Image (cartoon, rainbow, N blue to C red; front, side):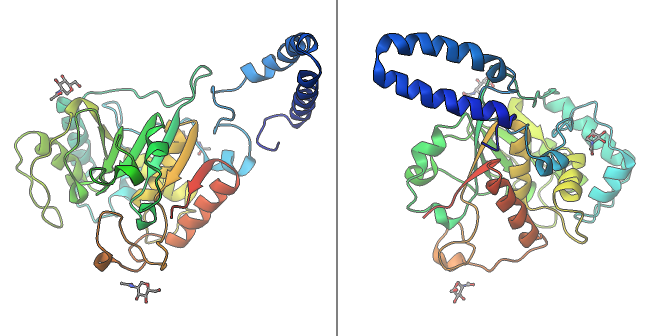
Length: 328
Ligand SMILES: *[C@@H]1O[C@H](CO)[C@@H](O)[C@H](O)[C@H]1NC(C)=O
Ligand SMILES: *[C@@H]1O[C@H](CO)[C@@H](O)[C@H](O)[C@H]1NC(C)=O
Ligand SMILES: *[C@@H]1O[C@H](CO)[C@@H](O)[C@H](O)[C@H]1NC(C)=O
């Protein structure tokens, strides 16, 4: 019962549920009279729920509420004016040499091409937004999660994640695809491209990739042009990346959050129910992707704090804020 807002009401709810089951066994008439009372009693507290799911993310546990900042807007809008503070932290991620003014100019340029939308990320009492966050781990192979993944309202994939040829295990639908220039791929017409920017050039690359194709190198060669629906482009705000780093990962020095971890936190802001697939190591304890051969295995490395991220994800799972599907 601990995930329901009011423990007392919860106990009454369960009690009534049990009585209801007993009455159903007795006879139909008693049952119908009882169910009237049942709904009269319980509907006020069911109605006060912030979303239409059985339970909603944005309520309950103090640890969660301490970390979760509901008022933060995850995506860039034309009105976003980088605070000097957020920019000064963010620019160190990939040694950005741009000035704050150049950064602001790059943000302005985005909205000459892409729609300026105010995304409503707040829950609403008449909706239950279920999300599947689909990582790329080899543990998806042979999982037969495809139909389950496709049954969610929002399906978020990332980087090289693909579906063609893997539908039975990873599903076929993608509503949102997270990428950065170095991991970019073409998308279908109904998929939102969600850019995670790590330097000012990433913002300029996005404009270039939909127009002139003039930016072809960042710290490595990148796709010059991209096929995707430009009306569905969304860009994560640098201030959101700083929030994930500071609030969810306790500000650990010399790191920034991994794409997978940021996507999980982002999903907490976009959804009322979160299922996570394709995270973690494969059966030998190595990292590898379901769409690559075993020769591409590699050990857990990189500039991210894997250990801390793992603990937070574990905690979210223990508190039933996310549901982890461990794969096969
Ligand atoms: C949450 O985010 C808002 C908007 O950025 C900020 O003003 C506020 O201080 C944050 N709240 C907490 C508790 O960090
Ligand atoms: C893609 O979607 C847009 C609307 O978002 C529509 O105008 C366009 O015709 C679509 N293109 C294709 C190829 O379906
Ligand atoms: C994968 O895991 C196995 C067993 O733990 C280990 O022997 C092997 O070296 C790992 N492969 C790579 C490429 O790290």
